[in-house]
Image (cartoon, rainbow, N blue to C red; front, side, top):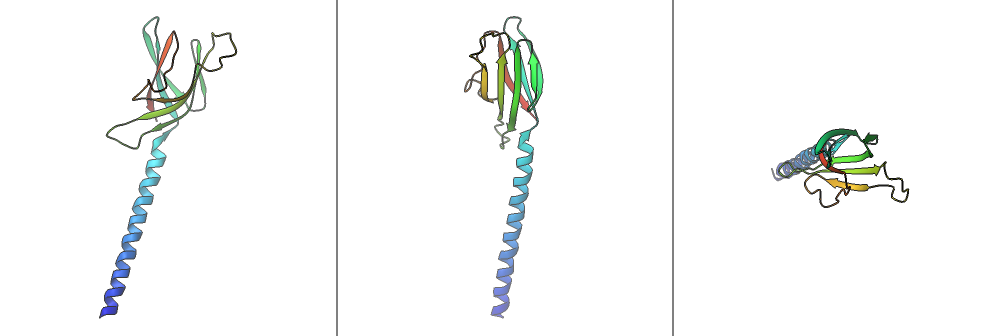
Length: 133
């Protein structure tokens, strides 16, 4: 009778461990594929005319908007639903600047909730990160 109880405990632990690993593996696969996007949405504000436009940037492609050349390299959504955060790696060139010393006006990570962490500083335009999908 004692042998049957030991075998039952081992089978229960093995079953519990297998279920735990399957659930953990499944949630990691789903969350990692859903977090990274292929398209970044940004808003560009023209400070002189006070008009803004929504641009959809396919990651890796360069888009031209007036005097700016904008390229989104990568975007990612946060894992948390209660405090969503969108991050994107964006490169911006000012095409009207004839000085070749300054290659990028902005080159770095942009955050949707805190645009002042890595500010985009331009006299005519302002850029905000809106969405990643």
